[in-house]
Length: 259
Image (cartoon, rainbow, N blue to C red; front, side, top):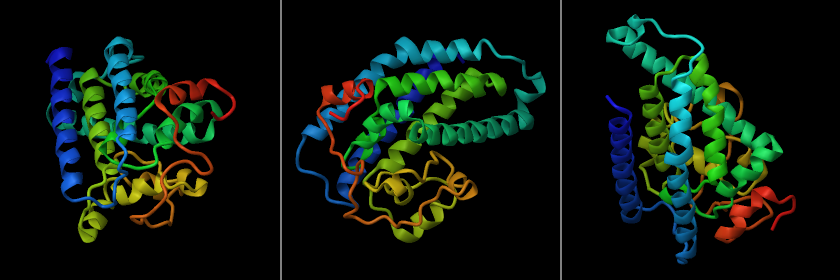
């Protein structure tokens, strides 16, 4: 399967997933959304920049990394039961890498300045999942070359992982009301809105917790799970500061003082 075919399949799957949840969270919402459309336009503008950066930087960078591995997997790992097992193990390890990378974005000041743009959003829904500074997207893709090389990750596996990450982010940022019993069961395996909304709570202790992206086991395993329970009126954002306009958010990572 060619790179173009894989990327087209990823785009279609993620696009359909986004539309489904965008509609669903308006039919059955968990919290009342803000009335202003300015936030939606701001998030859409950031998504547009990421869409531009992806084919120009992220895709070529990822393709280069997948073609310059430090070792080569034996043919036995590329098909059959062994191939399926290798795929699952690789996806889990990439998710583990993403967990620690997310923690780094919160702990290293230079990285936080990029990631804070995502956290300045004062409400969560599907559009929050694609609201990232393009600099963070490029940096994350660059750092992901490390596990790609160490695990000898095929390009197809990277693209599958990217699709899973985007679908997971759309889901756990969404404002969809989910029956508590069902979400409780689901949260034992994957990250759900009840887990990730707490990560966006405008209280620093909660912001610096619940880092997992796909699988929910990492936070309990590494003792970063918050005990705070999600509430419909939970204040979202960054403690002590407010969201900014589009251009100010784009410049924010490059300025020392809050603007």
